[in-house]
Length: 219
Image 1 (tube, rainbow, N blue to C red):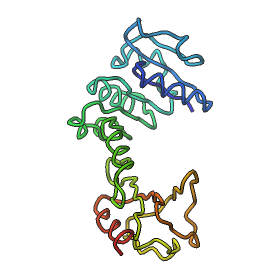
Image 2: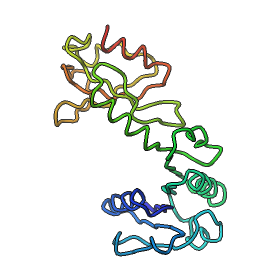
Image 3: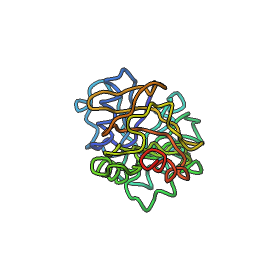
Image 4: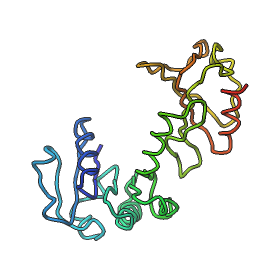
């Protein structure tokens, strides 16, 4: 997979290293010549230029890339990069970083964004996931919030403890996708019994979350 990343701060470099380690081709773009240091991310291609300018993206050959990532620390820049990547170069997948939660509403298909990642929201979700037992915690939004990846940690006495997965009475638009038990990640087969402290991962629509909690925890 060919991935272009606008912004070579700590976030952009970290994404690049992960992708390179997984065997993908990575191009890093930044307008600040002081940040263009190829030795810091070995194996990546580099381009010194403003990713908000079509001419620079043409030089990069952006139309040949599968994914564009707007990873700068400026939300306006990430939005412009996303829009250009989608509308001018038909990049199949556009991922954008949200730095300020108040700007979340802008990061949608109208701006060319397929997936928006809000750093503050992700951190908040991780905190909640660590301490909230028995509540539905949103970890990640899918398709502009039409569905969410959510987590429920089963408290002592939860209604479904001791039941098999097949006996769960889930809302229509909620699907159990994984069970995390200690250091194990378990595929939820119909016969798998549920245990106290299991972390259940669901994909669910926002409207079903209250009913999901009730069916899993309260019964």
